[in-house]
Image (tube, rainbow, N blue to C red; front, side, top):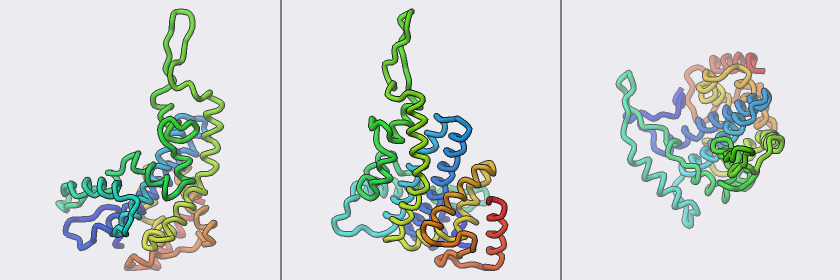
Length: 277
């Protein structure tokens, strides 16, 4: 199985573009688990923790699109030249790292993507996802809500009363209501992201909607989460497939990946689906 992770060994013949596509798929899985964790936390009443996970879900969803986009050479008039230049400078400075077995690899390119990079990119490429993410000081957006969680409310006490002087834009009930709306739309945003990728990045799209994505990228992150979160994450994958008119119950191989034993992969996929549904 050639695409077992988002890492590329220095000795491999993989191109930088292949690593970006691989990282895009792994980042999509990361985004999916953040969303699932956010749903689980909100269900149990942990609104602040849920808001942070929801923000990072959309942040990484934007990162998925960026990595797919930059896996292709720039076209004339590329509107994201500044972001591309900034990220490529970071990527070229990466130094090989050594695993315990002595093999070398280059770090995940997703780590170079900044919060403002995602906002700038999404504002032009996917306004509906950007509307959820937002920027600083845009009330009701996930970035503003995440910063409220991290830095507010703050107050001063004069000995008689407490006076809020920052972060008082959200009452508790309103905060939970806004977060609930974001979570109710999040599955659709994943589908929108997959649709955007389908328009120009077939290699990434075929991976995301394949059974191999569940067996590798998804499974890689599943071990870090309880089964309840993994089930919610698979639910997002199922929602994407259903909206695309695909039967998620049937194993679909990634056409870009070479398989040693496809029948074995089918068995593994059936077992994984049975446990998580």
